[in-house]
Amino acid sequence: MNLLLPLGKLCTTVALITLFTFPTLGFANPTSSTISLYHQAAQGNTNAIDVVYNRLTQHLKEHGPTPLTLIYLGSTETLQGRNAWMPWTKLRYTEHGLARMNKALDLLNQQATPVTQQIQINGLYESHLVKAVAGTTFTSVPDFFNHFERGYELYLDLLEDTAFQQSQFEATAWVYLYAIQSALYINDKHQASQWLTYMKQQDPSHLFTQKAIKAVAEAQS
Image 1 (cartoon, rainbow, N blue to C red):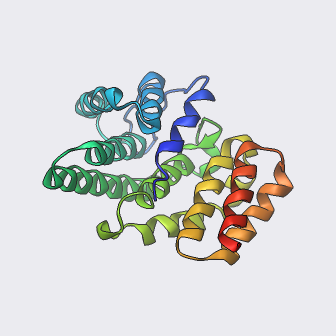
Image 2 (spheres, rainbow, N blue to C red; image 1 turned 120 degrees about the vertical axis):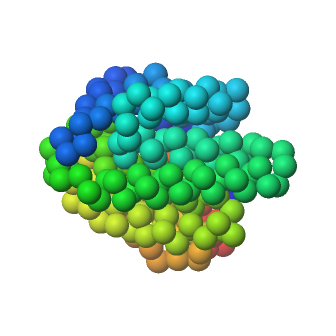
Image 3 (cartoon, helix red, strand yellow; image 1 turned 30 degrees about the vertical axis):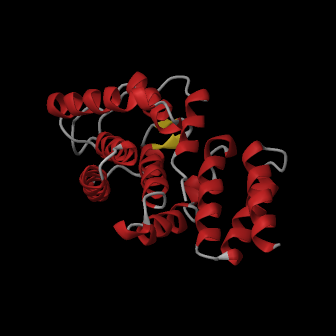
């Protein structure tokens, strides 16, 4: 199941991403252009993958780690794994990327800034964006990497977060769609239906709502 590519659709909504530092860490996040290029790579622009990787690697050396830097760098490494030719190369890149993303989540748990005091990036609070990218990546890599369960748990936690639910639906719709696809993948039709009900309440005509409706209908047929 490939849920990572649709993340690239976010690049069409990127306007301005303000740089900020976690007060408890004091390091800068990646630039808006790098994050935008990541979404192009995730959408399928394979020529952008190594460019993003090099930018993020250099940024990490110069500014140190933040959850956002590590989550995007780790996810980029899984893109390298997805596009590598040799099986052992695929394995190495993907394992490195997943390990880095787990470090990002650990670092996120250490920072003390309340969610609603964080800046919003693409309409999501930073910690929500970190978890969303992690959830989408973890549930998209092959099952033998044993990360699907953690990715699905991230969805369950994130979509119950009041602050996340109060964010603009235009910013959260993609997360609900991929969460629903993950629920259907493990035959959790009840959870998928609950999330779909929420999407319908927010915007029944939204493109991602319509895709979710179709996915649930096909799973139930």
